[in-house]
Image (cartoon, rainbow over all chains, first blue to last red; front, side, top):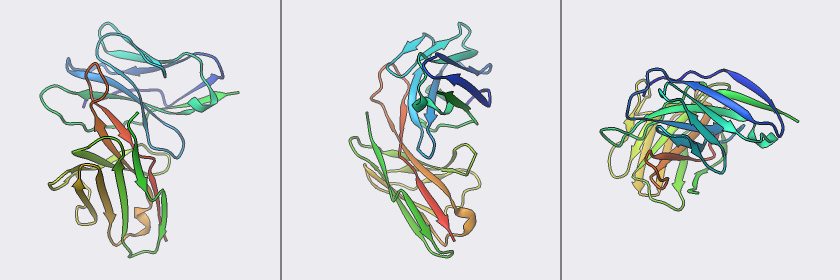
Length: 113
Length: 119
């Protein structure tokens, strides 16, 4: 899977929006952009994914650059429960069903009350 | 959403003993499951891919004779850490893919993890 680059850490205040960036300059045409997050002492959980168009779900929004070389995960109103490590992962779904996920270091999000 | 469970949630054992960790998909079938290991302050490292009815596929550097994986049914995979040593102490996490999410691109459902401490 192609590599992603994320800031090591970010801080936000409660009830404010949070924009978590991810660079993936070597993304290929068949790579989906997936975001997962891991709360302390828990397994990761799926947040959102997309291919080319911006995506919204109940947890977050995903804004994908037109050239697809970067994306931003948007938490519209951060809560203390959103404090976690956020992972941006590229998944190549072209040419087969290899479901493996390769985790980078992710971004540690701290939410201040 | 889909649920994956792990048992036990934590275990403490003596050096030299074997420990079995179970991973179950509760409301969906999983022909493939994954086992990860996570050391403190580090990211998840994929150990192996568990395939129902066939041998597991191990990542480079993971000893298959030490980390035995069995995927006997479509809802259960087990990881057995044989002859555990203190350096095997870690957070073990399993996952299973689900194609329920629409719009293409599979998603993974992760278990809550098992904390193994080897004394």
